[in-house]
Picture 1 (tube, helix red, strand yellow):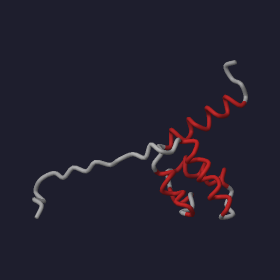
Picture 2 (tube, rainbow, N blue to C red; picture 1 turned 90 degrees about the horizontal axis):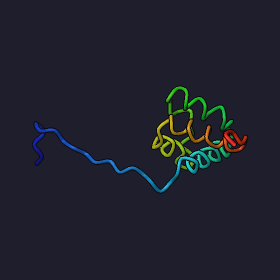
Picture 3 (cartoon, one colour; picture 1 turned 135 degrees about the vertical axis):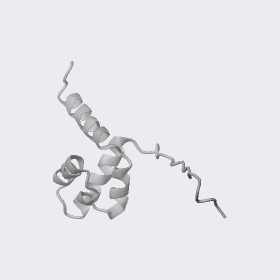
Length: 88
């Protein structure tokens, strides 16, 4: 039996198999399949931090919660800058 009077330590493994862009793509497609507006829903999640903006279909909610919201914004901005050739 464990001693509950001592601090318990847990090691959480981060999922490094998916990149932020991959997570966004999976979530986007899952939102579309369920008939939601993916842009509005993802923006709602990023702005509020409320995971209920994201469907649980295809494990999308769990996936997006593994990524920090600032990383999501950074990925979108990097892509936008690349497409519009900022800094070139």
